[in-house]
Amino acid sequence: MSEPVITSYAQAPARTITAGGVTYAYRELGPKGGVPVVFFVHLAATLDNWDPRIIDPVAKHHHVIAFDNRGVGASSGQVPDSIEAMADDAYTFIKALGFDKIDIFSFSLGGMIAQALVVKHPDLVRKLILTGTGPKGGKDIDKVARTTYYDILRATLTRSDPKEFLFFNRDATGKHAAKAFVNRLQERTVDRDAKIKLTAFQTQLNAIKKWGRSTPDDLSTVTQPTLIANGDNDRMVPSVLSEDLHRRIKDSELVIYPNSGHGGIFQFHEDFAPVAVEFLAR
Image 1 (cartoon, one colour):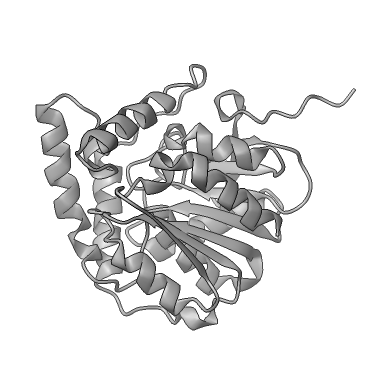
Image 2 (cartoon, one colour; image 1 turned 180 degrees about the horizontal axis):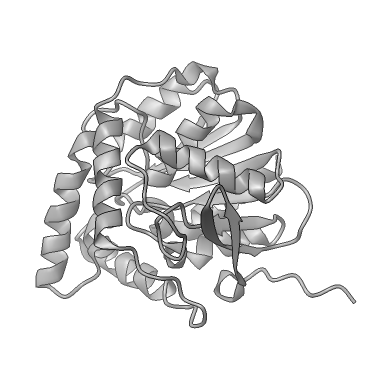
């Protein structure tokens, strides 16, 4: 008897693999075989930060892998001080699992790591989904830290989750979407991940600042089918940077959701999940 396929992220088994002296924590779900979809998570996030309404629809038809980069959550080691080094770790992890070809689903910081990975290892990536992110050297990316600290302070004062401020508009629609999103992240009750350490978070912020102040990569070399998405009012990684990416990556597709912020894809998960699934199936 083959074991039943798990397509619910809340039930995805917690696994580890050791490579290059680092033990990487990851979860996998969906049917094995074919090109896996590897999920690259956002700033300060661990495995517990993926929205099940985004992952579960993808896992119905794809082998899905979410992982903690070095020094994050339950993965060992220390967070690297550059996006490029984070991409090197991601490469080490993917190769350790034995994959020569992957699709990438990325969000925010994860999208920066994904870009660095595809620039260095173009043969590894078949398709690319970049959400809530921006290109190296992109306008105002180096201000992410300021916005982040400001919103963490606002959240602390109101005893809320900082993501409610950072990812969503502060109008009635945004507040409702924020609460729903934060609640969905609690659906997994077993084998929760370790929280990110403050030093790891600060190192990630510094790496983003460095990325924002660096010379842009030549993204005209990216020939992979690419889907770019964001909300129209992203305060963290300004929405214009999604348009910038769209211009730089030939034949890429761009989806911008109205009246939504950095977490536009989570606010509009009912619209976006099918778009992502269709894009990966093409």
